[in-house]
Amino acid sequence: MKKAIIASVLSALFIGSLHAAPVKVACVGDSITFGSGLKPGDARYPQVLATLMGPDYDVKGFGNPGKTAGNYPGQAGRWFGSTPQHKQALDFKADIYISNLGINDTGRWWNPDLFVKGYDDLFKAWKTASPKARFFAWGMLGPDYRGPLGKKAFPGNCYPDVRKYALSDNGSAANRPEAEKLIASVARRHKAALFDALTPLSDHPEWYVDGLHPTAEGARRIAEITFAKLVKNMKIKQPAPQLETGTDSLIINNKGNSGILLDGWRLTDGTGTLVFENATVVHPGDRIIISIGTETQTDPTKPLAIKSAKSPSAFKLLPPRK
Image 1 (tube, rainbow, N blue to C red):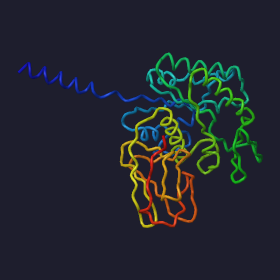
Image 2: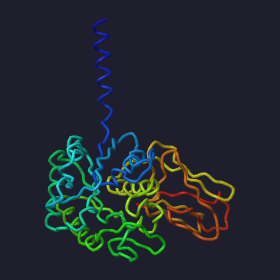
Image 3: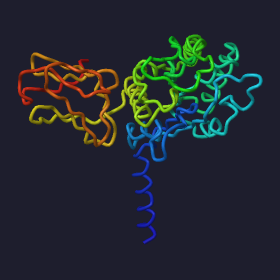
Image 4: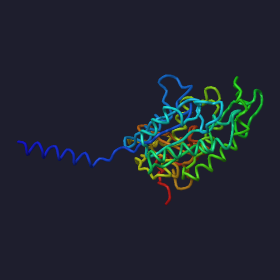
């Protein structure tokens, strides 16, 4: 009887050892990572990213509103390295650190030297806590639709005439280009992969609550952009997309338990071809519907369409070329 119990325990331990622990992903950052401006029940971008990454990944958000990458005189407590979230992210010992810091650095306290030193210190701390971790960071910072009241503020901020906010950007627009260049230099030293959080969001002011903080739709898009960067850099295994035909449309289903990045996949009828790009993502259990119409639409944030005179059954979905 005792031998049977021991054998059962050893068998359970052996089977358990065959299942690798989830890859730990730490999203560190300011109010955008924290989810300021979102309604109760809205998913923060790290939560959406967790869904996209699937059960083999443990994604946690370590966001703190108003925090900076640099440690500035007169701004006590604003440096991210002084926060409980920083300590929690270190204790987490993540395999991947994704940093969204820099927007709050560009105010009146801006100091390039202190910015670089503070960001360097953060990367060193993450590397000490988890020596084999991989690093990703927002190189082009997320858009800020606020501006000097009544004026445009680009470059640095995106401020179209179609929407004006009551709050000023506090002069941060002028310092953003320099901050982004310095982020790139810090990233090179720490072998951090950068991605662009500005361009994919810079023509969607409707995705922002107050000009700076994203709505649930904006947070979802940020998660998709982040997921796309991780997939392309880490060759993450994904479910296979499944193509179905409708009456005058094509349907790409994701029946897996993690997201699918379609970038590089081709939808073709032999003459016309739609190549997916710009972080086109199918969430687990979700689908994308592509209309067959008079023109081709390739913006993943808008209804997709492909120009064709053929029936849906003529189309094939082909994987990216190697």
